[in-house]
Image (cartoon, rainbow, N blue to C red; front, side, top):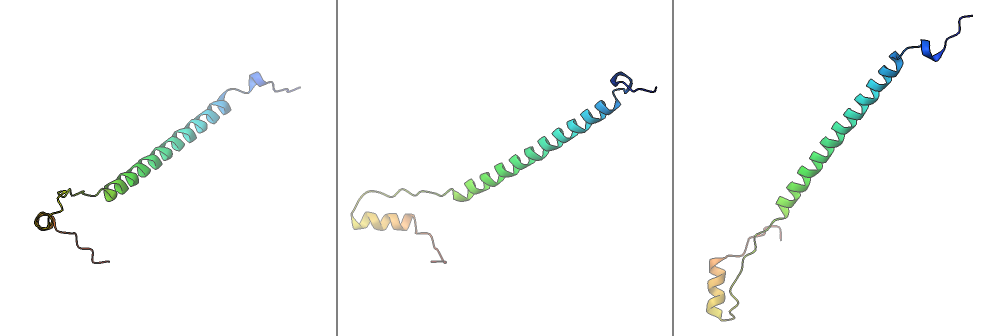
Length: 81
């Protein structure tokens, strides 16, 4: 007549299970945070690459003014084109 009731089992297995679940949750949050940081860095790098400089030329249509604009802001050289 050795009956085991739930009151005699103790709380050891419950505590062990809770510790494992908490460790899994903390690990998942850490990995997710690293993923978000990596994604943010890639997005920042892409934003920096896409930034260009806009040169404002005068609106005059006189040939001398156009020549001055070209001398002040030479066209960029694109060797790939």
